[in-house]
Image (cartoon, rainbow, N blue to C red; front, side, top):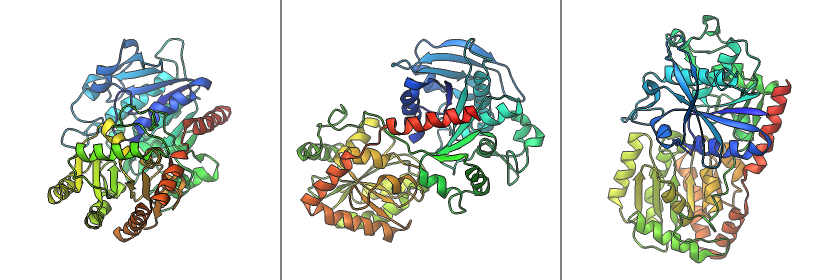
Length: 471
């Protein structure tokens, strides 16, 4: 089966969030049983890292969208990658989605409609001679118009759309219709219209052959008003038709503390001296005081969804009880500033690294005793999986993928309400466990024994591809 996997980010070239890790791991996991090729926008970072990029075709200008070239390259291990090359759209300072000030690019509608249409044309076999897709797997709003463009063009290529986070929908004013070539008849409730705006994600939810999301719990949650972001009616309809499936994400084999080269010392279950070496290294790396108290880590996007405000509210209690906190991530300026202020107040006990470095993040997981994951909602979450593999017990809210991957009181702790009080209840349990080394080490061992290999999830995707193709 020939599968075209469309993503706005992938670890090999550019990373903003967890989607990049999924986009790197899942196509590789299904390669043994499918001819899978990835397609990504040609951001500056992509073009600088792509080796032997060869132009294989060109997409003509359409509506208000410029023409673009399609290049083909391969990753170091041979995964084929198509690159949509449009310098005016993608080769910019800033991130794939926002400028250097953190503001959305004003032409994101054109940027990602151009990407989605290019994906459709590659899938139809109009770009790379001798290759066309049997199925397109689109991801999130940035490629969600691909199923719609295919439908509007009368194509029979089946499509799967994965919702990694329903809160990000790609909303644009009605005037975008003409710029990106959406037929006027599609601007209705059974189409792309969402409260008077154009919703890229809704277009995908309506036109895709099948929908998936990244945990079974989140698949249920998004059919309810609390988590449905205004799209629960459409999602419930797709669920009733057995066209919405939850498949838990996995993590790749590099998350092995016995072999990870980024750690200060390797360790396995029961080898707690190695974990202590990593804890001491993290304290030194981030300027914390030497301590034998618990170390709490937070590696996340610094946004409201991730419960960063809850961590800030709980920080004084953690520090006064003898704990320390190290945070790594970037996001909303208000949270970045608040974390830096907390560090200035207690530099011996609070460290805030604004930005992201993979090696440092891995050492935080390896050195911390507990990982904070207090998300208000969490479609799947990867941090709690990384933490458990590295012997750090996650403390997360009972929602989405967190409730499926954290065994409360066995491999971490769950709390129920998105409140400081509820989080502190779980943190109190963590402190109590830290004071009983036998129990702490038993929980660490149980956490490290959990498997989140993609070999468990990849077959479910392939089965779904076959089902969509047959339908």
